[in-house]
Length: 639
Image (tube, rainbow, N blue to C red; front, side):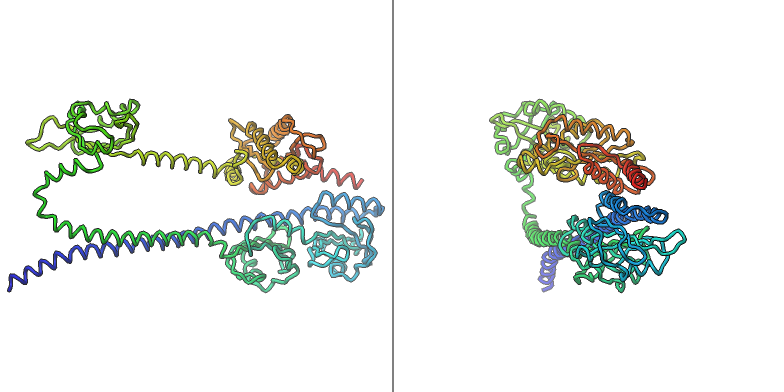
């Protein structure tokens, strides 16, 4: 009875030990997989939100700078007019023409007007001076009763002249004794900001707003809900008071959607810009990756369970195989002759002493014909030196070497094989001729897949950094290069290049010809920057850019003029152009002490390009000349 009990206990112990090991294995692997998925999900969500904060705050900053520059340009022009009207009383026809000319240089301004102390129109940029009286308007009352000389950004109102929502900029006019002499008015259409905001592809339910510091909506995209009062929102109750810029999660007051929200307040004017991206959009990629990770985790867990089942089976199989260990030597030889890998034995000279029968399956060779031959006879001539070098590294039986090389099949075709080899550990009765034992396997398919993967990765790297049509750097590469150059170089110039009348060329010659035209212009830019530290990139559409690190404005103008002439030298016929040939306009901007960042530098180059277009195209304009030209033009008008 005691013997039976002991035998039963031993049987239970032998059966339960593999089960406990398998159970612990399943639990440990499952915990690792689930923990990894959870950690990755949390980290990826945090990264997505951090990236969203950077993108939203950067966009809010850029839009705030654009809005400030819009108001600043108008403010500077209005300040000059206020000073002029304080001491002079110009003729109506001359001053009206001066207002018209000023508007041409300020595309954001729809009209200028001057009201006298009674609210009647004194001057106007309109073809016909309005007859209605503005004495009852709020802005007129404000300036009449307050002697504040600064620029006032008024509530959006419906223009009596155009019937459109308008943002009025006003300044008080004084007599020389300081008494009230009327109001200077500049009108900016609300659509001016909306048209600019909608140029950013932010996705559905995203929003951009231009707000006054008291919470009044001056412009909002995508809706036209201007004039709305948001002073009671968290933004104006707390956030703006705490910091000029910020980022947080809100429920939109416009559509009630939960969004991630960034804002930045202008330092020079009582306005701020906000950018709001729906939370669903911000986390869309993260959710997609999370679903993929969950699917992969499910597959892994299923694999763990399957592996556990196999392990359990193997444990039971091992118990049953204990009696068969006495036949180890014969079974080893059986495995060596039948496994897919080839087992070889070499003497000290590298001649075959033994080759397993699997060589017939792997290489189609008869193992008997290989005995006594040198192993180097099967090595491709270009790989012999590498094989010898690996063999030279063998020092003792504890050292193993591995190498991949080319060999020949029975039909003389080439195959890639991998061999792991070492000095043999000889028993006392072993043949003294045995020096090296190795295991060789066919890795041709793996090598082909590795080569294809390497080529694919190389191609993907090229596609990620270059424009597919022109072969130049793409916009993403341009932005990264410009950011690094601005950080590293005190001298930095940017060329923005636009093909003149390209739409007309494209419409008349066809898109295929248009693509060919873009490629030829891109070739000129590539030649201009080859073997230099400069970067030529496609900025978008028919616009290109050249970044010139360490180059001042004078040298940049030389490069720009050379590019312009080289494009003209292509002699591409363009019926839409005034001169009959394709040409480019180029704006040049160089870094100076007032350049805050690379975005400002790029914007200055864009302004110079706009001026080049305005002056008739096929020319190069430097941004530094714009302010000088503007003041020169103003001085001539005053004279």
